[in-house]
Amino acid sequence: VGEDGAKKLKSWLSWSWTYICAVWFAMVLTMIYVLRSPLKLQDTLTSASVFLNTLTPKFYVALTGTSSLISGLILIFEWWYFRKYGTSFIEQVSVSHLRPLLGGVESSTTTGLFSSVNGEAEPRPSVSECKVWRNPLNLFRGAEYSRYTWVTGKEPLTYYDMNLSAQDHQTFFTGDTQQLKTEDTVMQKAWRERNPQARIRAAYQAIEMNHEVEVEVESKTSVFPVVFRCAAAYVLLAEEEATTITEAERLFKQALRSGKREQRVQDQITTGKDINLLVYIKRRLAMCARKLGRIKEAVKMMRDLMKEFPLLGMLNIHENLLEALLELQAYADVQAVLAKYDDISLPKSATICYTSALLKARAVSEKFSPEAASRRGLSTAEMNAVEAIHRAVEFNPHVPKYLLEMKSLILPPEHILKRGDSEAVAYAFFHLQHWKRAEGALNLLHCTWEGTFRIIPYPLEKGHLFYPYPGCTETADRELLPSFHEVSVYPKKELPFFILFTAGLCSFTAMLAMLTHQFPELMGVFAKAFFSTLFAPLGFFADKMESFMPSSFWHQLTRI
Image (tube, rainbow, N blue to C red; front, top):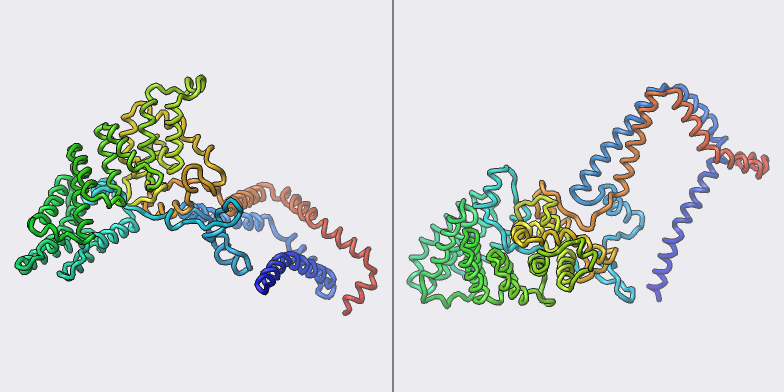
């Protein structure tokens, strides 16, 4: 009861605060009017009007011009901040700092953004929605990303993205055994180094230290973990130092051979991190074979890897397999893989959704015509294809603009955010060629993808086939994608009020400055008429108060 009473009292005070402020403001105005004679307000206003009348038009030109300049600078800063961070600086400061001081409640809480059927607030699962995933098709730094930097002078990877990769490598590739702690330290330092040359030198140092220790440990039955740590150094060299895919493949094969040097200790691979390193090497070898044109060999390696380690589905090796099968145009095998992984209980991805849409669109796209479909209606197969496209677009609405080449592509990052622009870039970079190969598929996508937004409920608190679109994708994508890329934002944000306000203020004051400079006399007459009209209601109110109250009352009140 005490808590309910306190809440009611607090709500009543919050409700009455607005009216109390209004009453207080009215009382202040009344007291100023009553005490105008003792305070000599009339004389002050007379002297101020005389001073303003003596000012030349140049003063007003300078005044309005300065106001226009200041508001223009504020507009430029607001626009830059909005393009970079997706919000207004003034609005953010007012909501984050001023509103709590004034007793308001912040609206950016994690609860209350979604409502259940009975109207109760449900928490928004923002942590799981905005999880960053390793890109299963990420490129090689030395052989691909570095070549882009050499040609364009731009860095395709952000520090945030590379830092996530360093954390992944430290977690997955550092062994669990207690031996060779010095080499552990060297490899952990190698992954953390920001300078590529420093990482490469640390990897060579780890290889030399492993060669020295290997002779010492061979008499014991623990050769395999020692050599496998050396493989981690070879992985770093293949990723960072190799300038061609062929050279990277050679280093990966050397890393794999080092693990098979002692077949009698294969049963010692019991730690999860050793398995992760083995899977990573075989997967990158399969990707090397795919890039070098040996696609059937790559498909076999990926199938064997998925069969040998079926519990490592979180690595999304099936997405590598789907891309290689599409390159072989083995659409029946692609459908078989989709039947296993496009399940309602499994997490989705742009690769799963858009590949399913591609297969259904391919079946009808050759004979599809928008004019004919509008006359006779959609057939069952065409309806299935359109629904598959709508499903894919709802999952990730950023992909179609890249597939339709309405937006330029960049190199994909090493990490992606599902349903975000980073995932769209990664998918379109590798799968655009497969959509072009299916005749008419892009035409069907162009005709139907925008219809998805008429199906999704608005506002986006509710989804249609998936969970509501998360609101944190823009911030995470800006961290993952390079600064020269224009991040795709969904849903499109309207311009903040303060940008529109400063734009209007800048334009209005600039126009006043120009008119005052060109027509000083006319603008003076206009200004006097404007202010006389503006203060006319106050004069009318003062006259009514004087006629309503007796003059003796005001005289006695002023004497008090």
